[in-house]
Length: 340
Image 1: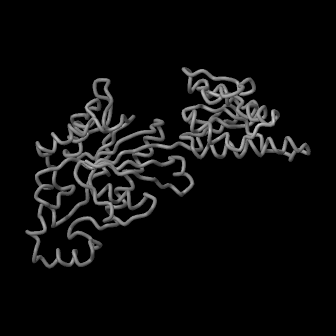
Image 2: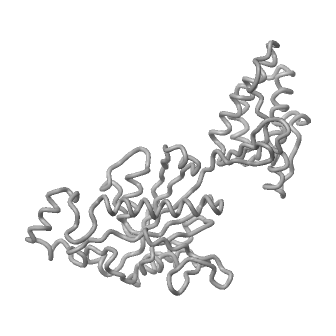
Image 3: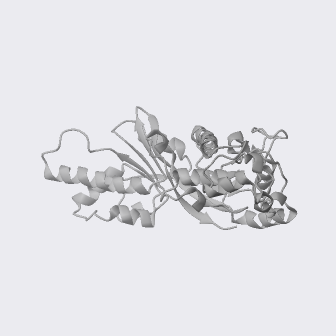
């Protein structure tokens, strides 16, 4: 469901018709019976509510019924709650009903646009994003610390697993990836319609859609531990000290937790900037386990700790968020886990 709201004669109808040229809009003032539950687009929705109230109808469950029967509707409604409170009891009842119904519908809608002087400002835009950890590499199989210093290819068996998984991934409007080979290979398998430039840069490739490479989405720098596993590091005083800290201490000659988190946030901010600029509402981010853990711990609600978000190779995490909330300081996302 999408909504266009605003005052009278502000250009709501024109904007809605420009953005949805292929659907049929019906005038709410002329709708009767259950036609509203089948209409692709509804103009003057406030007049439909007025008509129901004039006829003595109960509108208390109208929003719930509309969501259940017509969840994909495009609704254009005039804001009627401003100005002097009417003396007429019916007009007060009408204004309250429109406000309450629209508030309920806006909470359900994936996008809400407020129109003033013909200019639409999106005040709510729900986006879907899939975080995908790259497939397994030889170092992953051997339980080694494989970070940003090691650029490994995927294992053949992991490539086959990813091909089987490809059909379970919804279509997206954009794909973003770490520049590491293991992430680009994973993106290429899961999203074959997207291409990557030879130098790993984002951009158009022979007119096809391309993977947008974000360098800040690289894995942690494990420093002196890079390329080793816990067996090889057993007995190393620095490694034992790091283990005893619960993974809080910086990696020797590598990233601190704060540095890695900041880089992950910067990379994600670039993803959001691009989505906002291009109007992208569904995307995939192919990156590393540590990056996903950082971002889930930072933004997912309900809150969980960093190590609660361990993400296996090839695993997907689906999150939804209102991209407009970036401007209000309360950005967060809800999540849904999907297996490998």
